[in-house]
Length: 238
Image (spheres, rainbow, N blue to C red):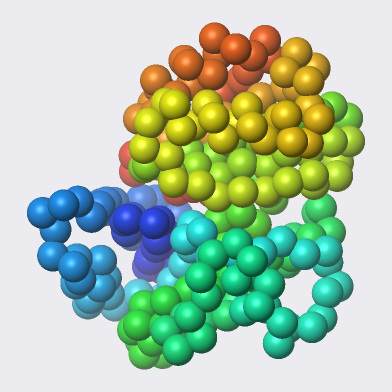
C-alpha cells in the first residue's frame, strides 16, 4: 500500500511516501526570497503525479484556526471565529473541522482551495487534519502546569495545559530566539503559570531549532525533549 503524507507549513511543503509503513522517500520545500511565488503549488503538482497512491494524509500547520469546545455545532460561524485570529478568505479557503475527543476540544481551520482541489481531484481516499489536533493527540500530560512546544521550520505551535484542561493553544511564526522566548514568556505571564512550577516539553524539529531550546533552558528548570523528527522515520508525531 502506497501512502502519501503531506505537511503544509506557513512557508513550506514536506512530503513522505510510505510503502507498507516504511518510509521510502521524503523531501522538504521551503519558500525563500528567491523562490517563485507559486513554488508550493508547483511542488505539490510534482508530488501528486510521482506515482499511483492508495491513500493520502494531509496535515495543515497553517495558522488560520480557532479552538472551540467539543460539541460546538454552529459550523457556519467557523470563518468568523477564525477571523478573530487571522484573515479568513472564503473565496480561496476551505473551512475544515478536526475534533479531539481526548481533550474534548475541536479545531476549525482553513486550507487553501487550490491545494484542496488538486488533492481531491485524484479521487482516492484522503484524510485531512490540523497539526494542532494531531499534536494534542500525542500529548500524555500529568496533573501539572505544562507547556508543550512543537517546532517546525521558522514556526512553532504550543499548548498550555493545567490538570488536563487546555488553557491555550497558539501557532506562531518564529524567526529568531528573541521572538520564540518572548512568545513563551509572554504566554506564561498572561495565563499565570509560574516559570518554576511549569514543566516544558519540546517536540518536532528540535535539532534544527537547537538554539531555541538552549535559550529556553537558561530560564526554565523543568525541560524535556520528548520527540525529535528523524528524517525518513517520523512525520510530525506519527
